[in-house]
Image 1: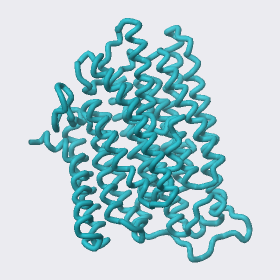
Image 2 (image 1 turned 90 degrees about the vertical axis):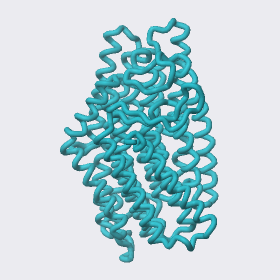
Image 3 (image 1 turned 120 degrees about the vertical axis):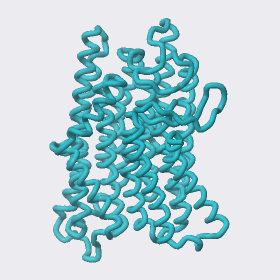
Image 4 (image 1 turned 90 degrees about the horizontal axis):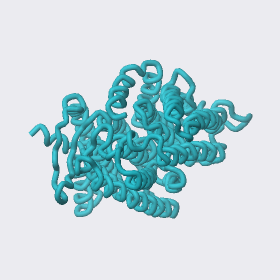
Length: 509
């Protein structure tokens, strides 16, 4: 019976969202007064988060599995919870209730509220399904479902920009899923276990004959880019800036945890739990994916400096920072996985805080461009105080959380370079170049984040915003303050989290 609980965090929000959609379809919007709808959605979200917390404490790492159903032969949709899944699931469980709270105020005057919160709730369950996936088949199934439940959220405003963005997102996601599916086929046929179950160290035969090994390495690259579509890996990133046409509660979760982090998480699973670093390390496949991650970091941070639309600027920042995670993963070492996980956690708080600050300004004043923010910090002091903390952390300035994860990635780069050099690999210089890329990106991050703060705190004379603009109400401010507080706490006291991540990295790397 206790194993059945492993399915609850994925299925409860999905079923709750479906029921809301059905009731809305048959009885109309009037059946849900907004306050009643808010209490129902927040209630389901909180209960689900509590269940996830209980499972992390009592079930993580026990090896318990729950088979939901069989597809064919050994292909099973199954749930399990190991260390890596616990980190992702815990992150989702912490962020989602606060994001829902924020969205209640943001969406108060919007149309089709029930439909919005139905898909918002289903997205929670599908994302948890990715975290709890016990094998690559299950992960892929929920990965595809994530596209289906987030597509209506991007489309929700029904503007021309939203329609274009949703189509683009769908095309990219379908294309990426096709490449990822190729990886699943090869894992299933060449695994040492005969299935796609996740095992630390991987399940592929590292001693395969040279021709087979080259094929597997090529397939890994295809699958890396396939899952990398949702992680906005260059040149598969084009959907993400356009997706800012969606409401801010959607874009914040797209950029902080639901979609992009699911892509990065899938790449970690593929690298450390399916193909395995013994097969990949020092190969042309490692050099290709490492180079792609570095190119994305440079491209994203450079484009963010050029972008004048605030949310699109943050979108390019996400493109850059997600490839920090992929770069750490591409080091294919225990330290690389630790670095990738630390940035996955810290970036989630930094980015959702930044997006929610931008959303608060848009909600209160209608300002969407950087040049319109002159003097806004004097009218919205709490919002911009939280933005300041997130900005400093994103730039990697100590002692905030962003510095710690970037330091970990740089350490993993030097460690990888030394390993490859000692092994006589000609590409040993590439990880060192990755460390230089981190320095460039840190500089660009400081430029594109601090220019916003300078305009807000040091406006040109006579450009301070009108007195009618104020901080939003508590439903939007409470999440911002909590996110900013977590960023500070992780920066000053990261030891407990890093102990957990080291244990995970030591087993999988």
